[in-house]
Length: 341
Image (tube, rainbow, N blue to C red; front, side):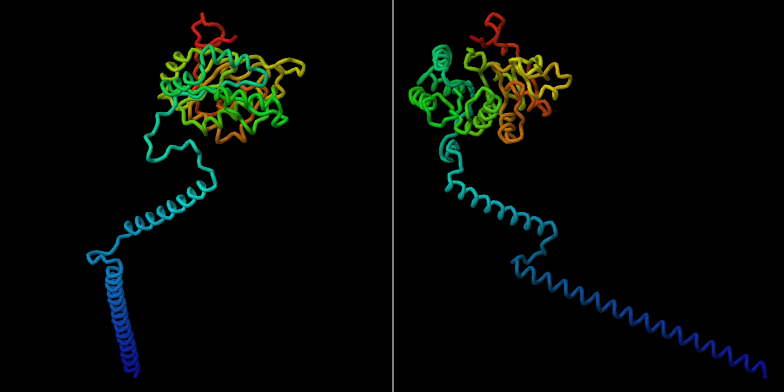
């Protein structure tokens, strides 16, 4: 009796095992059929989409690759940017914001000037200006010939009177009508303490008006050997960021009653000597530095003296300081190309 029950139990377990295997086999078959069907459907969809894409794009040979798609999108983006820029340029021209110095496309481009020399002058210094015109600058056709043949542009730089339109302004306008050799800073008010800002504005505006290789600042009591200056500058044309002058340090005057008093004396290290900078009688900066001044004019600090101010603008930049002893305007006998009078 017990043996019979045992046989029945074994048979039942065997039957259950077979049913489980059968169910698993059927499930596996259905799963395979489902996956195969989905793959077939996806394949058909891909073929259909590829044909549609070929039909739309007109390319019957192959589907556009991902790389080609990015290239097309990039071209469309650049075309949109170009169209926007052309519209902005057209608007700027209509509103008068395009420089009158830009050459016309159908004209033969002119050679860039070698240097633009700004002689910083002031009211009541006509005698000094006339002396410079007679000694080395020239007037009229001689001045134009120096520009055309040597690439050297020279202008007297001056601002406006604090009483705009007064006799001081009128005297400069009258002189300029006769000589046509002024670069008038309309938004600058002449004042002794404003010399550093005047120098900054000159470099900024000169860089915007002339595309020269160099820009030079001179005082109106300096005589210059123009040919020697041109030779020196030509030797540095392969150096993009140069600051050329008679380099010095100089004493800092921290007492308010002293002639060369520096209100910000405490900012200069030990408060006794300035950092290295070019002497203010005459110095030259390259095009890249003039553009730097023009772009950053609103944040460049002006100290009590223009030579120190200019030196401070370049001390933290990647600029090559060239200590050119021929720019030390002490005497002609020392080999200098300039002299003070």
